[in-house]
Image 1 (cartoon, rainbow, N blue to C red):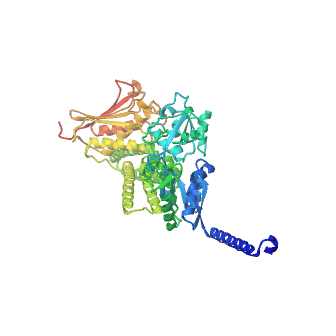
Image 2 (cartoon, rainbow, N blue to C red; image 1 turned 30 degrees about the vertical axis):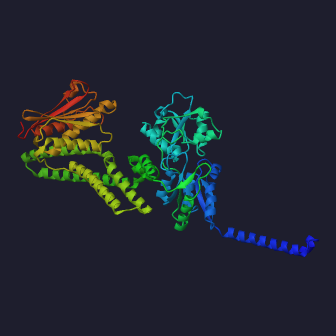
Image 3 (spheres, rainbow, N blue to C red; image 1 turned 120 degrees about the vertical axis):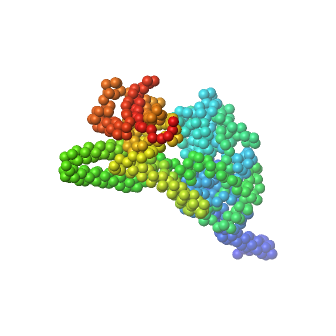
Length: 607
C-alpha cells in the first residue's frame, strides 16, 4: 500500500520512510503515555492583581518544577483570600503561594508549613520586603501625614488584605487614628488592587492603601503618572526604592499543606532553591522569619488572634448568653429565696414579739426595727448596684475564655506544651478565685446579722467600700481617696455598718453628678483627724441643694429623688450616732456640690 501511495519511490527508500514513521509514531505514543502517567500537583496562588497578572508572575515556577521533577505535572490555580482558604480546606491544592499575612492565618487554621521565601530585587531582604503605601492625589495640599486623614474617605482592597489594609491599620493606630471609627468612610473596592489607585484618581476617596511598589510598577507600565500622586507619612528605608508609609514585613512564600506528601514537599523545596533568578531578578531562598507578622496580627487582634477581640461585655453576651441566662435565673432565684426567708423571719419575729412582756417587747421591737432598717438599707443599695454585676465579672470571665481558647487552638495545631498548659491553668484558677471573691464580698455585705464591733483600720474600711462601689456600679464616677491619717489609725466599730454609711454617701454623690459634664463626675473621699475624732468626708460636684432642703436631709421619709424612699440618710445618721459620732452636710465653699462628713471616736495610740 505504501508503494502504491508513493508510486515512483524506490523500495529501499520506501522501507526507510516506513521505518521512520513507525519510530516517530512509537515515540509519540510513548511520550503521550509518559505525559498521562505524570502525577498532577496543583499550586494555589493568591491572585491579588487578577489571574492574568498572577499567571505572568508565577508561571516560571511551574515551568521549572515540571523540568526538575518530571514525575509530576504542576499547575496553578488562582484564588482570592477566602477562595484559597476553601481550596486548602477541601485539599484541592498541595502548595500555596501567598503573602505573609495570609500565611499566618493558614498556618493557624489549616497547619500549612512554609518551605521557601521569595527573594525580590527591590526588597531590603526577604524579612523586609512587603509594606503599605497610603497614597493621595498630589494636589491635596491638606494631606501630608496619616493624622490628616481623620474624618476623610479611605479606599482599600478588603478588611483582611495584608499589604492592602492591615499593615497600614497598625500605622494609623500609632498616629492616633482608629480607622473603623475615626474615618469618614472606608470603601473596600476588592481585587485587583489597581482599583484603589483608580478610586483615589477619580476623587471617590481622599486616600487609598496599596501595597508598596504597586504605584511604581503601574508607572513603569504606563498606567499612571507618579507625579499625580504622593505617599503620606513617607518612611525612607535604605535599599528600598519605593514609596512607603509603614514598616516592612517578610516577602511572599510558598507553603505545603498538611496533606501533602513530605517527600514531595522536600523535593519541591530543593527544586525551588535551585531556580535561577528570573530576568527581573526574582528567586527563591530559605524560609524567612514571620514573627513580625504574628506580632502585627496579635496587636490588631485579627487573623489567628481574632479571639482576643472578644473582651467586651456585648461580645461575651453574644457568645455566652446561655450561661448568662442561667446565672441571671440563679441570681433571681437567690433574691426570691432571700425575700422569702426575710418574710418567714419577719413572721416568726412577730409571733415571738407577741409572747414577750410589754417592756421587753418594746426593747426588742426597737432593736429589731433598727437591725431590719439597716439590713433593708443594705439590700436596697445592693439592689441598685447589683444589676450590673456582670460589669465586675467581665474581666475574669474574659481572661478564662481567652486562655481556654488558646489551649484549644494550640492543641488543634499540635503546639500544646506542658508550659502552656501550666500557664493557662494557673491564670484560669487565679481569675476564678477573683470572681469567687467578688461573690463572697456581695454575700457578706447582704447577710443579716447582729452588730459586732471590734477595732478596725479606718482606711481599710474606706477602701473596701470604695472598691465595692466602683466594682458594682456601671459607669461609676472615679473616686479619689485623700488619706491624711497615720498608718495605725483605728476605730472601734462595726465595719459593715460603716461601709453601709459610705456606700450610701457614694451612691448619693454618683446620683448628684449624673447627667453633668464629665469633668464634674469625680468624687473625693477625705480622711483626717481632729483631736480625739476621725473625720470622713465625701465630696461631690453636683448641683447642690438650697439651705432649707439641706436642713431636712436626715429626716425620715424626706427625699429629693423621684424614686427615693427617704430612709438612707436617716439610717446613716442613726448608725453614726450609735458609734458616738456625728453626720452632717455642707455646701462646697469653692464650687458647686455638697460635702457629707461624719466623725468617729479615735481608738489608737497615735498623737
